[in-house]
Image (cartoon, rainbow over all chains, first blue to last red; front, top):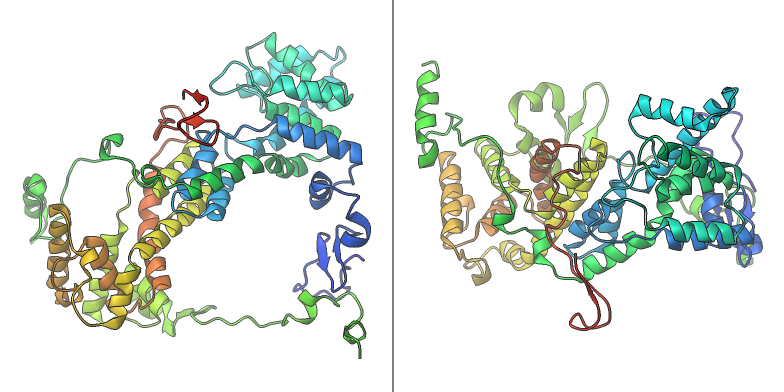
Length: 289
Length: 246
């Protein structure tokens, strides 16, 4: 049953294609949850339907599930996860989880950048297809000259993304390493490496793999974040369970103040610290009578 | 009639439909429009010309507009509540969000949620104080007696500042921590439950946290990732098993 737009919509009714809650069953993206999906659709299939994409086959769901394990990197020092830890230090996991998630959209780190990488791959393909010689290295040079870097390429703090070998193994095991976008991404890496030391990272490769699973860039930006959820869950849970006063407040010697020197407003005459007394007197003298 | 037969048919036959009202939703504080009001007071022509932002916050949270002296006392108390430093988790989290290159809206939501958690924990720690304030009699519970010279000095500063506006009476007599004293002042100025006290702490601190965040570069270079340090261990007992150096 699909929610229909009323012909006389007065602007107060929102059309949704996501879901409808019933007394006997619930609907999700055009399907009966109990009557159709239960037993036939797993978590990743839900995610694809959730963003309005097509229904995955069971084999595709297994593939994505295996892929998701390869992408796990839950070190609490990873910056958005550290935000989760900081908030979790007050004892509750859910606000910590959502705070860490709130870092992501538009950030220069984190899985959400896969959407930007996907758009970049689309542009790379368009530029390559527009060239008579189809020279991908020339496209890579052009784009690096224009932008300085390519989204989905480059790995912070280490020379290679350590997750790539297991991702590639999963891709090969499922016969997916030569799908069109995945092939383009790997060929672009080879072309880019001929120009600059900028290997593909897991976010970039994931963007290509998800394009091959028919997600749009906007859809895969959202779904990419789902891949990180167990990392957030683990850090939110442990952070909330632990009593770590140093996460709530760093010791004094861990902070170095680099702001303005002591100064006086000139408005509070009686309680001026000795350090700012001369500044206060100078400010008072400058004020009009 | 069976339960199934009693249910209306059609697209709106949902427990979330039939058991939900169609509106309107009630507004208790703000009447919106060309002449908005806050708890009945004209915002543009009255409050904006006569009250500070701290007093507006107190009005929003308590429902009552303070007199001049009490309003000034509220500004003083909120300023004493406002200081949060980068040493504290909410500001650290907001700064780190900024350094991740996130849009400022992300930092605002991180700061607000972290400050809310900090305020919740602070009110948890002061539950006995709030109960004592609600009771209204006796001495400050011993757990909230000032234990350091810095605390005593800060409370003296608070009393003196409030004394300037004739409201030194708001601070409980005797030895008291600064954290307890400023909560007591806000309570006595009309924030009579922990929810409102918690909200006031967030309102006071959010601009400070955001100021520190906005002063940070949008760049992770130079960020001390090992502050604090994490030590990874495997196995049930932290003393057993492999330990990975950071």
